[in-house]
Image (cartoon, rainbow over all chains, first blue to last red; front, side, top):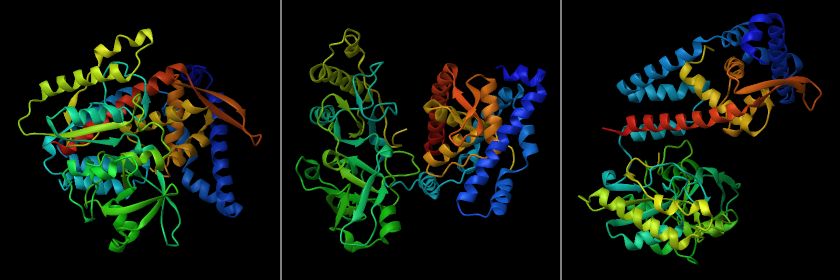
Length: 364
Length: 109
């Protein structure tokens, strides 16, 4: 039904419908309060209180039937962006806080603070290069539609690492970690198992970012080998928040998704991982352990892309020829490791390319 | 609780379209789902929700239908239209671009 025309010509009926709709919502809120243990009287008054004035609500819904909103929206978005440029710190923090009238998790303030104060402990972020320019996620089989690759298989990552000497270091990280928390429990304690954020990273990832350990040690390449004893690095935040920075837990065992893993060290303070997130990883594990810990079958499947790649280049490296080199290598290898059997896929290899983007700011 | 700013309106529209892309729901369930899936971080106030739903319906990105809930009560359910599905894609892309821009502003010297 054309709500606009109905609102004009059948005001009464639409208005009554809105009453019924709002009443239903209110009743649900009262029921929920009651189920949470409030007395019927309290449930009702609490619901009316959070609900606000129903008349005002109906007025606002009616206002929504007008045309003004579009112009207002565009105007305000442009204005908001101009303001952002002028006072980025305050304005963005305020905007994030106000958005949707929500309570923002304290973690995002810590992250914004760290970014703003420039205390991210990366060494020389300007020489970090990311292979890829999109936030394609998370575990892909098949080919990229326009030939632009930002997500890679383990096979391609390892070949790039071995055959492109322009990258002094090349590291990889799991793209889709925000969607796959793990269950962690410290061995030999009474603590309950908890669901935590974890990211799988190559053995040289922390080193490539130029990070120094806060305690214990960070990963070696030898940790990221099939069959190596499983190890973990904990984030500084998690170490401080959940374990009161207890040094004696370094070397102890954790049960991660019911598999035994040894905690070897703590990442530096102020490092929150490679992307802006309200839930940065609490734990880091080597890529190879993803098979056992997450039951992932695709770590060594050449047809499955699941990694973001960043690397360090020597100062003064020309990026355009490097980008062309990486693109043509990836193109060649995809032809070898993939089957472009379907007719429509046959033209894809020629479009294959990788865009090099600055890596110091993380994945965007 | 004051009127939401218009920058905020677009974001709420995006979340509503997304929730409805999974299955048709009534207003109460939409707000609850956003709350739950976001880990209790996003609490949508009724004052924002209903104007947003009516606005989206006016733009024909969603449509409504009165139907019975499992408990036998009558409620107004919303469904995503094909146009709404397309709009969801557009708004999601826009949102990603905006948050990337914010990030740039924070980090560029």
